[in-house]
Image 1: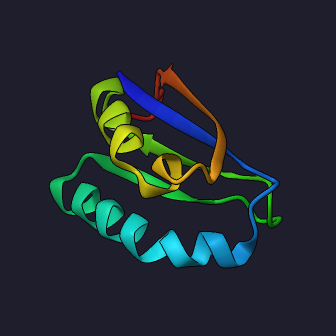
Image 2: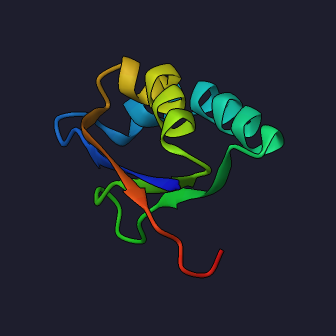
Image 3: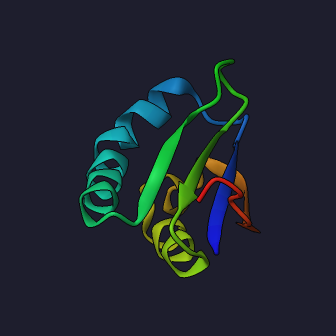
Amino acid sequence: MKAVVFYEHNTEKTMDEFMAVFPRHEVLEEEFIKSGKVLGTGAFANPGEGAMAIFINKEAAEEFVNGDPFVQEGLIAKVTIREWNDELA
């Protein structure tokens, strides 16, 4: 079963703080893309609304969140992981 991760941004953090950490976040993201563990990822269209990603399973989602510099640096106020039944797969 796939898993979806929702990130809610810490509104007390500035875009400059996010951008300072972004290169490290991007390295982790690329590792998960290359390994096939993430199927889609990105920020919502309106700045500050957060982001989401779809992973191959809950374990991969948890691994990503636990290693994500955005989370480690307190840039994410809330993380929600939900298992998802993809009806197209």
